[in-house]
Image 1 (cartoon, rainbow, N blue to C red):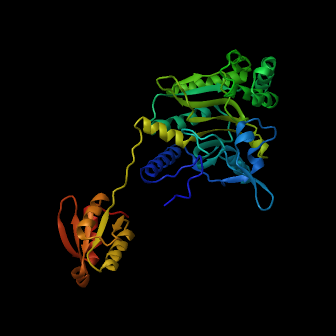
Image 2: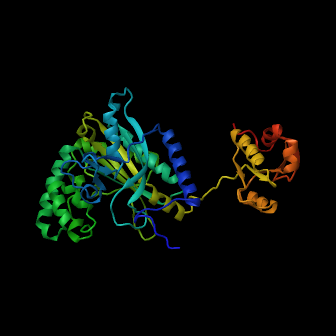
Image 3: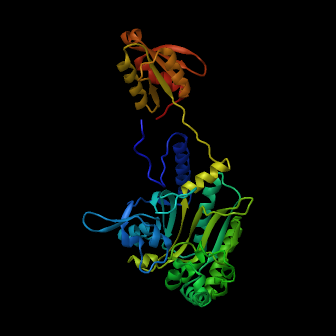
Length: 425
């Protein structure tokens, strides 16, 4: 029979072992976020388009990759392409800036959407974990946030990684650097791609992130932001690097690192794996944003955060042997012999109410087939009931490890299973 329906390009289904691995990663992320004092926030999958499309935004995400549409009311909405701006919208809308305990530490976990050419680790619907610490400006907060991402990567079994880091400085430093970049790249205008023509007008720093022109000779000689940092920005960045040194986190200063979004200031970073060929692919990226909260009407508050693409992280962790699917074993398998299915289901429900996972047969297999199914499920206890057991309101309880089997009244089944497996509640 012809399969008429298939997944949209750039999406994928998760099931069997894959979904078990994803669940492990999500549990690991939540556990480590709790260690750092982060609370979960869940925002809508779509927002008003203007939440993501800032005025004069030069990023490829805004200009090329957003899934935007008009709803039945004529409003322009966009499937969220990244997490930060939705979090800032929620932070301001719900007046979280009024908290006496800032920064407010929030994390998110869920699907994002970008129209891009699908490739390994890059999808049109992808999943991102991210954190935002909003309401404080401190180099130690930058370091702590980077350390959070670093610890998650290590906990997933990802090794041989390093932090690529740079400072974009404060407004004064960036203004001076923008002018230097404009003066430098203008004579090379004919050699730049069409997108870089736009970037040079909107935000010259974004030219440095061009994937088309970045390998050209004149790019390597472009001015470095390090030469344009004023003293406060230089001191701030030095404190961040010292903090990374103190925590033993390896890093490399990359003077042309600017990140892909326009709202970053001061510290920006990417965590990259370095393979034997020296190739790099970002698995975590983020930095500080100063002015983003204010642009949403929330006052002059600074934030620091990062995003982590789960597809890339999980792929890399599996390649390095850091993630293995662990299928939870089934506690109890109820074998009903003959026409006593209702009786078996009643027993199963009693055990489930006590907190045990229970499987039954619904395909009317014989006893041998059901025993094999119980073995495949990894069941630790097998309960067997037939017509005689139904009449006597009893059941046979077998410990699959010791092979011991006893017959007990229905009222004693939970207590008998508790002796074998321990209490679940």
